Length: 610
Image (cartoon, rainbow, N blue to C red; front, top):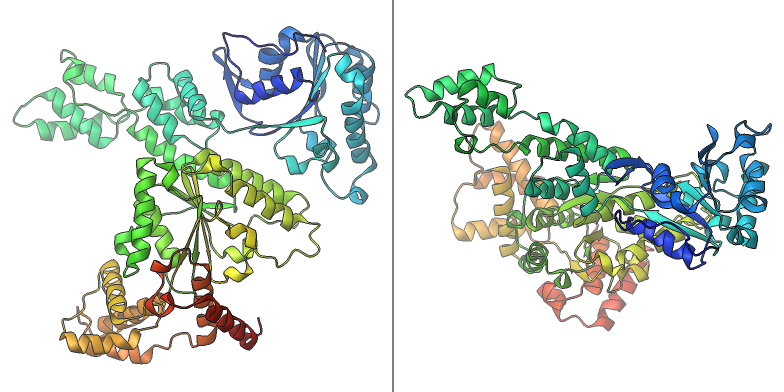
């Protein structure tokens, strides 16, 4: 290997992933690299946007390579630098790697080979189900990596695959083949792209747009911002601008409205020149020319991400904050402390993850959404990323984790966590479940994500969870949820539900109110909400604006709650067992010793045949 290795132009610093390739190559770790992740994006360098293969060829490899070849299985080989006359025609059997072997191993010095869509040449799968060509391609690349001639001739090979699990496992397990992730663009890359698209953008607007574009690729960001220079103000902004340009005349407001309709579609400068060209621009109404761009950016960003991760993640729309949660004062206090730490950027006070545990209907999902609103963070729910196709599940997971990391700070909500992290269904899946869970646990315990990615895992059966997922450093806070244990908790829940749905409850004497609400003790929060909805329906049928005590009593009498008391008790005891703080437990469980708790759980498990 020669000393010059890969080029490094001081005037154009390389992205971090390209620097990683350079270090590994110069250190002799590998001469074959797998580039995965954001490989279909553009890279901004030297004032232009490059495809990844062209960026590697022209900005990284060009000075140090005598020949650079690019193999696309659908288009064959093209020479980006040097000549490749003997490869211009496809081999009779389309065995491109065999045709290239003489150049890579036995012929040229200082050659670089770039292979796009490598997973189509060396796909993942059981060996017995792969074609002979697929198996031989994987063996050939494996042999190249171990051949000392590759390094001796200072040759280098790049394989491009959007997802690592799509490639043959033989390549991934080879220590002489290095995998390097090309991440989604960070803030600096997004800001540079904004300035490239709109050179006249102010520093403040460039920063704002780059912050809001987290999770987008450079090519997507550029497409969204390309019309920004011709962006026109909306009706409100246009009316305000015209009113300022007209000055304090008597009919300025009416004239501004009429002129706003006539100038629809015109840019700010065009409107100013038409209405009052003599008025200095600085005196005009301040118009945020990027306000509409940001609206479009938010909408399109969400559409793009949900389309790319179709069925894998879903954005959470939280319409209520923690003030809408009735009762649960200890839980709300705990979550408000975390929300305040998130807002203040005090990452050391933010847990890596939280486990919401308790029986069904106790408000876990409702409180999680309220926490999202109170924290001010974006949030997504992790959907079913498992697939029946070999390699697809792991590929889906990597896509989700990459997107989540780029969107941070963000909350990731996993409902029914016992299904995602449980032990059921692993038989016959070739170890996919264990690998997926291991990857998720690795991501959840990565301390670089503290304060940037906060997991909320919800379950009513924590006993089904992989025990390792519940340890501190992954799920630091275990927050138990229970049904209302006294009249005060029921009353708080009734008030919160009535406020959320804008129900009006008729006043009644305190003693009568307590007697009525005492019948709802040990009902779930979902049951209490159902009772109030039933009472409101009856009130509407009676054409009364308020829910009377008699109507509420009739609804309570008519409603039948969940009667599987043993299963509910089992779930509550599991929540007690998992709780990380005694102060969050109801009084009836606060002094329960562990031996008694374990004995009761064991007894219920036998009764329920779990």
